[in-house]
Length: 272
Image (tube, rainbow, N blue to C red; front, side, top):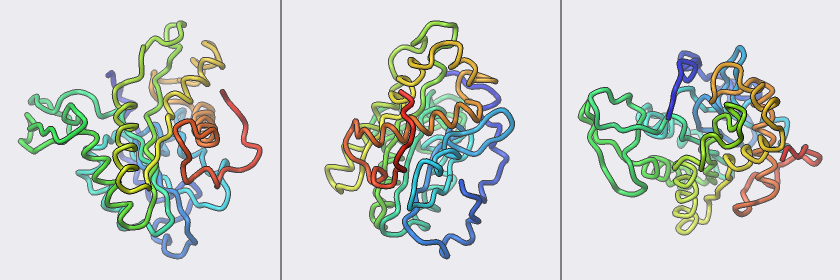
């Protein structure tokens, strides 16, 4: 998977404000339910020519507060190691919802001396790798997200595993230049199945396929215009459309009903 310097654009931004400008210190003063977003720069508040889709989810929902806890440059591994899932576990209350969407920064191998601190151990189960740089034990994508989900569910929250957004599928002018969905799409789906079977409080949204369908409908010229800097990060207009694709996928319940379905605003536009 390719990365660019823009992947880390918002790495220096402190996420102290949620998607509606609510101070994190005042979380206990707000009414539940709340939906928290855990992800990378494609979900996070970034800035300038770029923006993550999480900032455009609030207008599509009603009766629920959105808190965008996505951070640029993070993977399931680094989000875990920085204590961010622990922070979320401490915040959630019964009835809250957490959307977990990673994948863009999870590729590669942790075994080399140049381990970037983000790559997960290959596999979907109990496989363990050793970082070639730090010597730390590195676990699989599924281990990280499922461990986090179990803790969140134990606090009374529901978890939605959302597959990562695709890169620009029209790059080069031909649709589908990146071929089949990256493996983390399947990993997210598997995580949902694993947790749903044991807790009944996990579900899956195929955000990747929803956005892919939208890009096919939009065509090459329009889709390419949504990527001002690279093939991964969208403009504010693109982020808005990606959020609408997520909401439509929730509405259609492609992969089963999620707890967000009842909070969708009537009249949300269809984008694919």
